[in-house]
Image 1 (cartoon, one colour):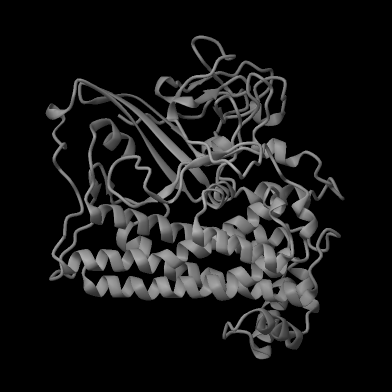
Image 2 (cartoon, rainbow, N blue to C red; image 1 turned 135 degrees about the vertical axis):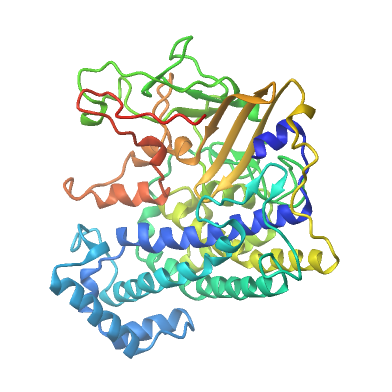
Length: 498
């Protein structure tokens, strides 16, 4: 969508920009909280240890770090009883297959019980606050209301089936609920857990280069530089300089990917000229072994100026911090002071996890601001949400090409499109987990996942919780890297969109 808008030089209406910011903003907040509690916290929290906790001491701990109302002895006693019933039944659902009792766990039982309670609370909370996404985008996480030129979201103060003062007031209540949970539960829990694992500031650094396209537009032109979270590149962990981003310097290798390029796999290609041709010639199906000397991944290897880049919340917060973003700097300094550590810890597994919390807080604070902005537009009679000026393909140039940048919760997302005679002739996307999970390139340079694992201590190779801590800190989304093949290595099916 943004790539087509860029190719055809389309400017979207103000309301469309605000709605897009709101959709992205609530997705960040919900997604990051889910990641912390439901995808990453159990790498640090021993569920079974929580059964040894004293509910009174748990309540005292919780009350010492936050005034969240659900921090009574009776509340934690009820959570403990619920957990005990789970464990004794043998049906522990989402807690199955955990490495419970692993010696790498360090939290006391009371901290574990507090975290379990908030794990369960977050399940209900996220289901409620994401209704903002449902109202504006219809579906989470892949919103259905985006269209070239704006948003398919009607505004009509006199209609129950459109955005109006009532629906904005409803969303404002949800935004308040979102911020309250982040302030009083997520951030205190993050700081409490991190305080027991400060040694993880020494592990998980990765490639040391960070890329952010920037997000939350403050004007309506395609790929604007006027962004609430800025665009930029940090090289070699040097926060004294933020480098500009030029999309022409982005290329992809397939040297170690199960793809081939017509002109050889040792060269890289810009996405406008990218191809995705599957190639596998090995003796066994690719999913049965890992040969890092050959092809070993469904992911391509994106590079910027031939350098691997980490993307995601840490990259965004580092670029914002180094760019002088006032609120980001305030929250980063608050977190560092609470943990009694210096900024060098940011380049680590611990820093990556903390950066996600920082971003969640500053984004949650902006949701009411954008809602007020939308309400003010409606009040003054501006109901426009889309620009149809260039919807007729007969008005397009014979050939056009464009790119669109976005920051998904997991990181930098870029789409590139070529259009000829009103039809798409080539389309490529470079997604966050391709940047972070990329295999080695033609020069043998590792991607961020691989680089971040070097030097990680593993106490028990059969239960590598330390590996999970670092990989999960990136919040991997591997859907684009998972394919179904038969025992002979052949694709089971291929879907072509016509």
